[in-house]
Length: 159
Image (tube, rainbow, N blue to C red):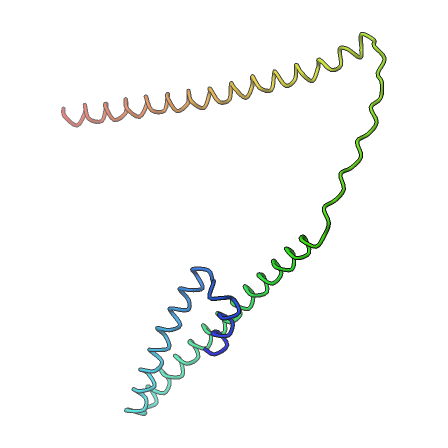
């Protein structure tokens, strides 16, 4: 438990909810371990000793798993802090120079080219509108069918 407490201090007691639940479970198991130890001291039989040893092994396994997960969380947070520090110390990248504009000769083909992308964006937006409309239509039809089905069920139940 000592190592767990040290790790919790390093993490400022900020852990995930699943780890908190596992720590609570470990506390409960520690209490059961003490009770099992008391039973063994009162009645030192082979059965009580085996039970006590099983509880000890299980608690140690749970504790080692929690320690491993806490260490992993600590490493993850340290890596995040290092990344933030590196980002803060790194100067902002200089904006890329804009490419020089080339003059395009005024020909009928050159004028037709810019209109093609505009037409494509209009057709894309109209297909998006059709998709949105079809979703609403599907919901309406589904609702009507549901109401009709429930009505038919009630009608036949009454007969």
